[in-house]
Amino acid sequence: MDINYNNIKFMRRIILFNMITLDSRFEGPNGEIDWHNTDKEFSQFAVEQLETVDTLLFGRKTYQLMESFWPTEQAKQQSPVIAGLMNNAEKIVCSKTLTRVDWDNSRLITNIKGELPGLKNKQGKDIMIFGSADLSKTLIKLGLIDEIRLMLNPVVLGKGKPFFRGIKGQLNLQLLKVRLFNSGNILLYYKPLYK
Image 1 (cartoon, one colour):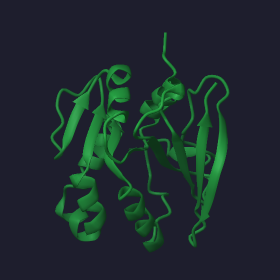
Image 2 (cartoon, helix red, strand yellow):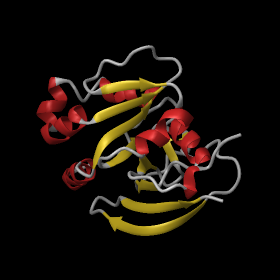
Image 3 (tube, one colour):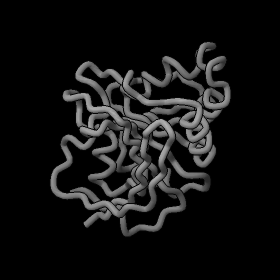
């Protein structure tokens, strides 16, 4: 039986952030994310958001994608501030298939139910999860996601993977705020209302 942690007061929040299309896709049919609508304003937002957290939470696929870019010289030259924040943050990788993680400040956990509530109860800034749709679904099921931030991009893919695919039952969300970007992106901040 799954425990719903929503009624427990934790020191830190887990905040889910993802870019999605108008038709709710988070990646194209072959995993493409080349449709992400980013610019200087988005980069400044990314820095501001990363400065509010000290721990990043990833599923295997997103971890491997991030690890393949952020420690590189290209990332450090292209986006030095974001690269620094990404590389210096604690990174928790939730995977049952990986046996090790090599990116600086990374560690592997296999028991989400057993370890994440303790992580939320440690002193520190909030915890951010980027993408990681399967992990996000598990955390939503457990009631461990405290805030969902969806960056709605002005694009329709027509095919690809819907972000909330696999969520069983209704999940109501309370809109906390909205931020408009000059690029046409709209950032929606939601609080999940677990039953």
